[in-house]
Image 1 (cartoon, rainbow, N blue to C red):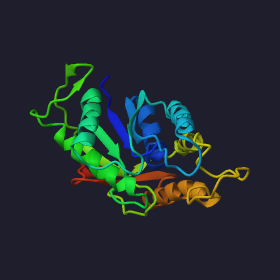
Image 2 (image 1 turned 45 degrees about the vertical axis):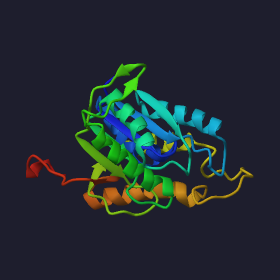
Image 3 (image 1 turned 90 degrees about the vertical axis):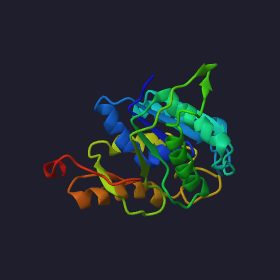
Length: 238
């Protein structure tokens, strides 16, 4: 299945938190979108990998994506090397996306920056003819996405552009809250983490509102780009 957009996340819930509203909007516009999680989040303080699997599947349904896969890399310990690059190349060639979304270029969690560079490097390598990959014993054709964008996560990185996601923040929040084991729950007796506070959940909305304020809309999500962002004409800007 060819996709328009393929979003990668180091952990299940990264994509939802970083660009869930953008994905929901693109799906509403008829785009075919998929998600690939690099790890199962097995080192997460709360919950289990098995529970995260179920939560990720539920979140994917809420967002309306066509496919969701998990590469099963070692949470916290995967690296940007040939073995991991080849597995991502297989996903890129399998789904042939025009656009790839991936982790923030720098962040509090070490897996986010690693995931960012790993996916970015694989996007380039996927376009090289002499790198051979197979899925189900069939050789894959080379494929390089036209664009690679990085969503923003814990750190307040200055975006290169903002996407108007007004009307889709509720879908994003529902997808995020599908990970009930990970976020604010006053009845939970599991250890507290930086993402289990009520403030963190509220920050998802107020960051989107603040980005929206800057461009004169209700909500927006920010991205960084690996190359200059261009527009066809001045009146295409909002």
